[in-house]
Amino acid sequence: MRILVTNDDGIFHPGVEAMVSVLQHFGEVYVVCPDEERSAISHSITLRNPIKAVPTNIFSTGITSWLVNGTPADCIKLGVEVLMKEPPDIVFSGINIGPNLGRDIYYSGTIAGASEAALYGIPSVAVSLASFDKASVNYQQIKALFYQIGEVIIQNKIPSGMLLNVNLPYTSKELCQGVKVVPLDMSVSRYRHVGLNDPNGNIYYWLKDTYQELDELAKGKDFSLLRQNYVTISPIENKTITKRRIDYVSRWFHTFNQNKEDFFHVKH
Image 1 (tube, helix red, strand yellow):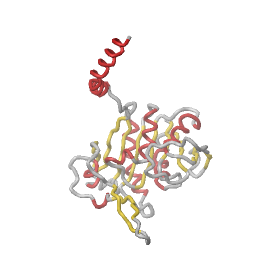
Image 2 (cartoon, one colour):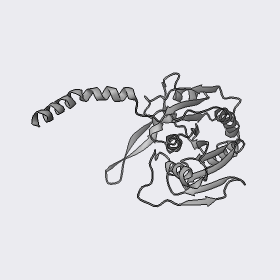
Image 3 (tube, helix red, strand yellow):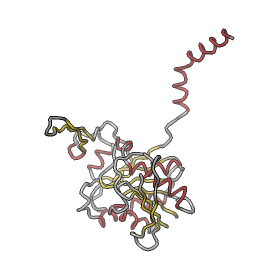
Image 4 (tube, one colour):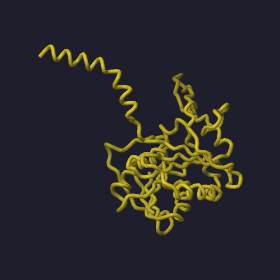
């Protein structure tokens, strides 16, 4: 099995090394990662600047890897289309520091890496950790938990066009309450603008992550269950256009099209 790894925290982030060290038990691992942090860059790609993919040997023997001066989506495109001789069987993006929940699917570079793979029909998984202090994270503990989750995912088949958004609680596998496959809580506005005055009296706005201050979360969804030490998994479909929705919107323009045809018929 060929496994491609990326993330948005950069190739030197310890979460990438933790993921690689686990996944190498399941197959041949390739790493294509940004050369520095690209958090919250969403699904952007580099259009007007050249991209370099530099081979590196920062991982253990047998891990083929490149660092890229681009986004996670760039990394997957390069990996699939250029760098790997054969396309990967599965893509993992992470392990991201900080959870990706609810509306984060629209902002996260970690999820974008998995989403780009899904566009190619490649099974893909985004993995994030409910901790923000990368300096103090016990990655041995996290690897033990991720090994068990990753093994189950690899043994099963992710449908084409779908990605799995996995959030790991920062706890041991013994204290983990289990796995919940859950909907995203899209009602939570996690990031809020905070206004600050500069010395000249002008106001500047910074986005503040209020994750640790959130309360009264909806039961049975990703935010609340992760807080209860469950691993949360949310299947996300990349198919954004459905026949039902096409028919629904088409009905709006039925009269418009009829009148247009009548107008041209009379004119001619």
